[in-house]
Image (cartoon, rainbow, N blue to C red):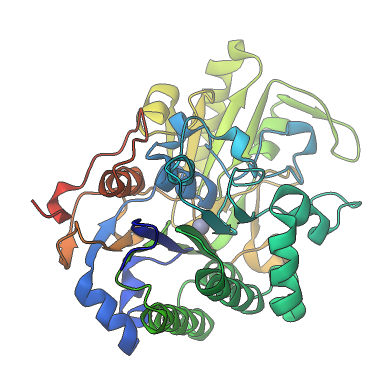
Length: 429
Ligand SMILES: [Zn+2]
């Protein structure tokens, strides 16, 4: 059975779920039917830096951050360093995407909180965008930058329990909206981003009761999804992808590179720590941090400073230079990238060199992402059920851009100049 002769596409992203989580999230009975029909790839690498926005953009573009244009969650807004905007808008993404290709092939598209889709050409779009200024209202922001009637409908039906990004309320709302959209709207391609596990791990740590509870909630959501698709007859005609974007690591200490730059006279501030002028600046990616130079004559000076800091602070694992950073697929405009050791992460404030997470109040996160995607303990997964895919368990050298390119191949779409490869190992001959 095919709707309009089209194979449908559903992409589910489980933020901050790694391949270590598969035992729990795959334990639902109906979901096991899906697993029998799917290729399940473990050991998938995130992108560099391994953050939500670069990662989700890599999936839909087949490109590494340096080419997709989404090289961080945060925008470079140095004068607003304490609260920069995020890279919310589709217009920041270079080239085409899976949802644009779908639309240009006559698919009706939908998206729930998929990152970097504000003002994207998606038929039913609820973009992820925050109220980041004191005068912003969250509902207004979402309505303005997405499909207002569609969102109003979902909010009216299921929005009662939402309290900002509090979980599980938000993902419960997203789940109900997803089911409604799949069953009552005439969509052919849908992307859904669930952030429950990510939010809970940031707050309570990678493992432990709270994270387990969130994983069990994902299990129920996946199970309910498969049940609904089977009940409504959409299961067979739908290519179903379930993926993770990165994992997380537990933390205990925050490092502040901008404090070191300020102390060295490279950032000048007033008494309120508002920036008056700067020659170098750090923009964090949690487990890593970009160092941008405004004055490149300071390069040797900054390099010396960073190496001295690394010698004196055991939180810094590595300092990368621009050619290495570009080769790994991150922002080629920066001059250095700091990588944190396990247990540490970076933020951009500049009052102190470092701070215990337990002393940091709201900005303290007990676990986070942004670490080296090569790390074996930090890998994620990619599952796909499609008539062109050979079901089975796989452990492959694969990263997020490969996912987009492989999905595009299965649908006969072209992502253009992509970095990813078609993962032929999982395809039928
Ligand atoms: Zn994420």
